[in-house]
Length: 92
Image (cartoon, rainbow, N blue to C red; front, side):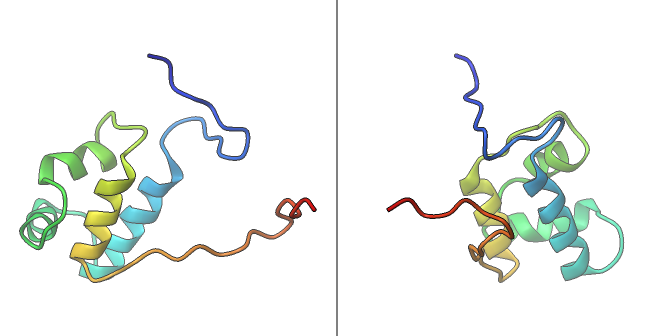
């Protein structure tokens, strides 16, 4: 099965949402990423520690939306959609 490529969401290496989640974890807990932080997120209902290690240090390139959501919510956050600068106009 081939990965579908979207013209509106292109990246070369890892999904940018991995960087967003990395920053969120670091800001929430303070300092560098650690197994203790991953364990806390897992205990609070997030994905497994192994999943998060693979996001940040491993080979995962495209994490599933549900796991990103679970990690954020386990830390007490939710996502919000905002308009991009210069985004495509709505067709009439």
